[in-house]
Image (tube, rainbow, N blue to C red; front, side, top):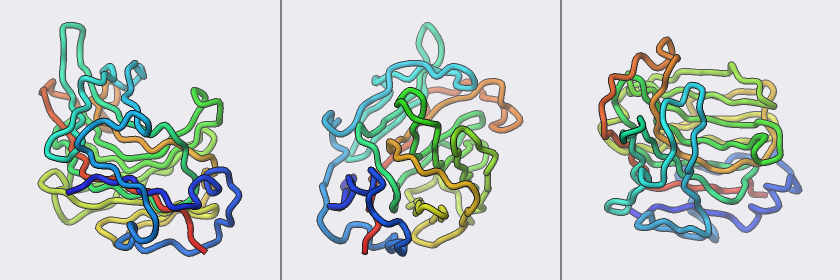
Length: 244
């Protein structure tokens, strides 16, 4: 299946905050309607995406390396591995920033204790902005659940765990969120499952995906058992700006 990042014609204005954000959310199932750019995950499209190549430190018990971002059968593969210096992991991100709108990913996370597979938007001090972030995170010790979270000016603690009714690691499913000025609604396979209304972030961010192993956060992720290589797979991603 093709991997797509769709950008409606109003994306730039939306990212700059010049479009009204009181519009209704587009249907997740209709995410590709309209005029879109199309990208296959058969290769790295360097004018749109970048591969992280540094260490976050802290709870991230690995170094991001482009060697762990690969493309197989039209899908992006993000791998947790190890070399002589320690663990390595993969992170893939857009170069552009995106604001209010509908974000979706079709993915299959890693099933393994101590690891995270994610899809999210982020901007922060390294971008010259405040820390705003919206998350879809799979904690590998139990992939029958997905965790939603967000940060506004660095303030988080908005975690919500949704029970899926299936094991996400066993096949590809579509996850997403519609972000407006006053709320964030998360979706699973086109169905709205949770909405947050308090202290919503408002800074455009990069669309990001990563897979990593943790340290010092066993109460959250469980202890990592050192298993490598293990990989999360991403079939496609999309962004649609709010429509009139």
